[in-house]
Length: 135
Image 1 (spheres, rainbow, N blue to C red):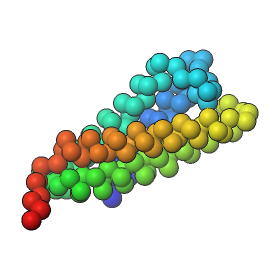
Image 2 (cartoon, rainbow, N blue to C red):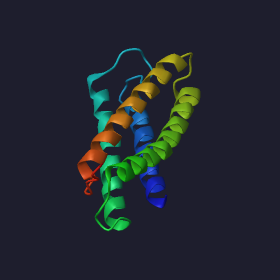
Image 3 (cartoon, rainbow, N blue to C red):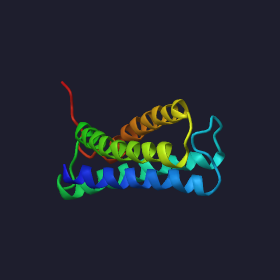
Image 4 (tube, one colour):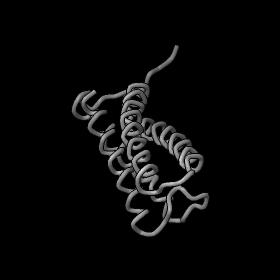
């Protein structure tokens, strides 16, 4: 659980920093339009999950980890990261980008959820080392 908390916090803080960095670059992250460099934010959960699951596999699983074990750890990391990222997003909506833009923000949160789930599946498949034979 400690590994999931640490890497979830890393993903959440980096996501929050990305939100504020985009604002400083002059882009309103809650507008209906999407800037091309906004797609680079996908690298945050991909890298966070990859290094988090790799660290979990090497430190707690002695280098051997099944797909479902990796997937559960990925979901834990994403849960903690999502809580922190939503906190940063609420701060951003209330204090930085004031206005009625909750619908655009909720659309981006849903997209982040889908990206996170796809990243969790991919990283879990990539880093699983035990093959489980089903008879």
